[in-house]
Image (cartoon, rainbow, N blue to C red):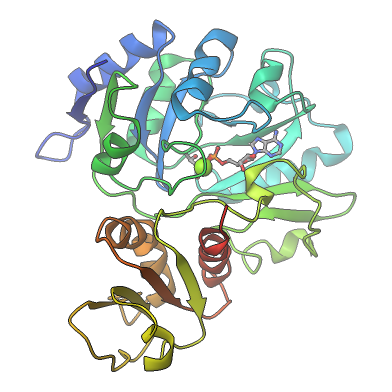
Length: 335
Ligand code: TXA
Ligand code: MG
């Protein structure tokens, strides 16, 4: 299959109707299309169609035990896709008012229009309304929710630009809508409602601090179903071995010939023609937010540089740093 890449925005920054129209044609025919969200690129298909969503699993080589997030237009009433228990309604509305459209995914009891395939048989569906205008425009025109996992092959690094989508899924999907680099660069926070509060199943851009008024409970290791990759140790894995260090010193790199270092703070003084050192962040004011947006691109670039090791320095585990360290530690876990 030929994978076509189309600019989603015109040079003056308007949505490109022609490209969006093409995406809608494919979606209406039940074919998955890759498109940008504010977090990472997603591979979208009609969330109410078992045939269309089965194609997502196929293209990604994703096992069917790993459920898909369903994306909603801001105009879609929640009741269309979720059966929210009366006692939870107030909290859910407050969450949505505060964080949608945006990078917060909420697990709620699913409505019958969502096929079991989408939730891998669970009675709960993961829902979010993305903030990226391209995604919202496609949702609004399509008129139905779109299931969309990250647009990478199963177990690999999430794509944050159109070229990365093509590297992952080129030849398998008909179209990539190119909206440039994604703004946040890290997947949405996933939360589940507990009896009185919230449990964070996957840390992300909406941090525990931002959710504090909703009473965040300690994250249980078994909170995501044990089989889902959100809870699997090894995920986001580059082909090159990746290890995490508090600080990268000459001792650490000595046993290797070709090392790529992602450093936090001061550049480590390391010798050798084969040592590539890149900073986590280029922004002194928002270092963790900037590091998050560079995370997957840096790993992808170093992974293609034929290195023996990617050595990564820890970032502070606060705010966005919690999600960065979550992804890095999963990337470090060998399959
Ligand atoms: O930012 C994001 O969330 C991106 C963009 C495209 O929206 N999507 C994304 O999807 O990261 P994906 O499939 O790569 O990761 C979704 C995670 C998976 O670990 C999956 O197991 C979990 O969410 N998940 C989805 N539905 C679930 C459900 N019903 N119950 C439990 N976990 C669920
Ligand atoms: Mg993913």
